[in-house]
Image 1 (cartoon, rainbow, N blue to C red):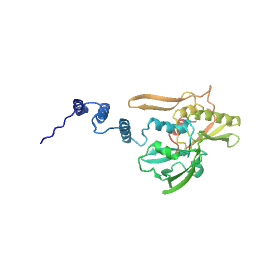
Image 2: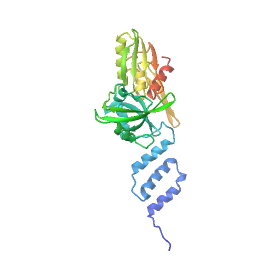
Image 3: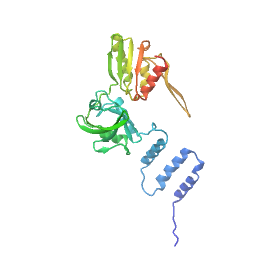
Length: 303
């Protein structure tokens, strides 16, 4: 006995379209594939999740630095740069299912117990987070919590060619979000400023720190960007406006299908606060993103 399979006319039309989809461009293929899944798949499909998973899959084929985050995840990632929260006080990056500590917040709970930039977090409380698929939102949910509560964190630390696991019991606290950790005079002529990240208020904090040290006689400056994991890109040229000649190019972007876009340094006032004195910048392997751009521009302009 022969069996017949009857499909609606619309489904037949959709299948016919997919057969010829090879004649169309990549965008059309993606739209047709999503439409076919939504209309023809036997079970109910969460279309938003399917699309987001497809985006993540595409970006995974590019490089370790290309990733996708939802609107909610992006807000949570930006919170340490512009808001207030309680947690352990680290900046981190998820790379190939491994959570790397980029830097610890100066004076924060993680720094107090000895966590360092470069540590790889293996587990949080009883949950393993290394080598498993876990979202940024879930990681933040595990690390953050009310002030005074505790969280147990196990990290893999590599030193001198060997690896060891280190366990920390961290007491969550309100996280200070200041960019400038320290600003003081090393001697009668030399100032020192330690910058931990590039956040929304970084340019303002730097101007205040420079002005304070100049009143104390600063003629030369040491700018410490060690372990600075970066942050907001625009904060770098805004800060460098106080060190470079007005209009100095800091960085530009240019893509195969996008025009050149330049970010230039301009002072907040009529002229830069510190454009003449000797400037020394300290960096290490954990100075990244906006910190790399800032130090590179200072070097390129022979400051």
